[in-house]
Image (cartoon, rainbow, N blue to C red; front, top):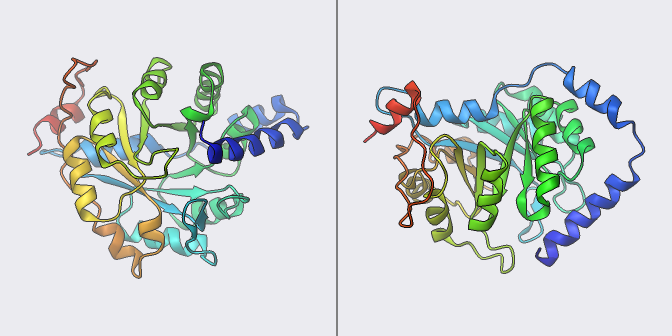
Length: 294
């Protein structure tokens, strides 16, 4: 695990170890919370529905700063930004809730959720059952699980708990080995992070390479380094259902217009990897619509 990620995850693990709340009570309250909106299904419908297939979905991120880029929009109003994203055509919103490294907070997520009628992802470093429950209790519809930060037993446990409390889980991978681990544990919503965890450089070939190994029934999201329409068009053509975009949108002079420039590109069927990687044909109406896309 790269040093910066190890540092952040270690901080979250220390916080989790100091948490003295009753986990059973958290689980009961989370499971009894109002039903979340379907994050995964919203992306799938946007990308794959319609007579000729759908168009690329956008997950627009509320993000104040990052360890690699520093301050992006430290004084943003989460509700206002989320509203701009929704008005611009975003399918879903992502909200950073990590305070120490990204300047976010649960309050940002609550404000964004109240402002929009579209599903909201809690973007944070999930390391415990309590983290999963907290995401549900603060109103999130989905949460992030980073394969590089979790062992297989942890990932399995957190995926299981996410399903138990009706949260979708965006499982983030960086390479073939992590993708194989995620799929083996039943991930049905996978994010491919194009940024190298060691160098911070964006590798545009990474996404195209990995998406060929993602089964058709798994919703695929491209993350990091997506700057504009050309990136969105390229990723849709590679077979991604959605893009998750933070920096380019939160720093845009016109956030509504910036979102609109990323949406709607035809999502083409994924091509089989050269080594005959596992592929599974979809059998739903959405499948037939997508395979007929131009």
